[in-house]
Image (cartoon, rainbow, N blue to C red; front, side):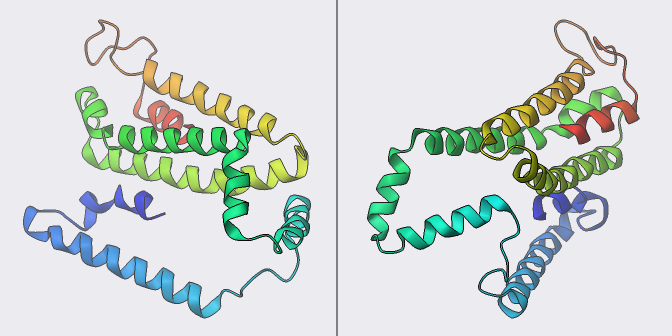
Length: 195
């Protein structure tokens, strides 16, 4: 959520170079509120398992508590599905974070203001946070024992929105403000939010 709020920093928190320290103070305040809230209000574990998948995981974890932690780590590292999942999510998130830092460079030549780019980035980050929670619930309910299918469906939806967004930008020998697909500020915002 911190990266989502960061898209709005140039709009209200850091309006001039002299106000850059405000961003660090605000980040520190957000982190402090999160840590204090978590330590004060969150219990050690949920009263009831929130989903069938978590109930199964709780049974498995109770069985594996007798094993030492290095053995559990070796078991994870030997699981190819786990390694592929961690690497794919890591690459995806790294690329998306790097790509998100270039929104102004990509959208500026189209005549989209810095304020609009900030709100588009904020909407993209907020949609990502909400979609992660909603998708987790849907995958637990509808894709039990078929988690890869749920992940692949989500990835395909993301790919469609990314293609829509990218083809709405000048590319492939097309110069700004022209693009392969017609675009408006709203169509770019919807495609970016879906991505």
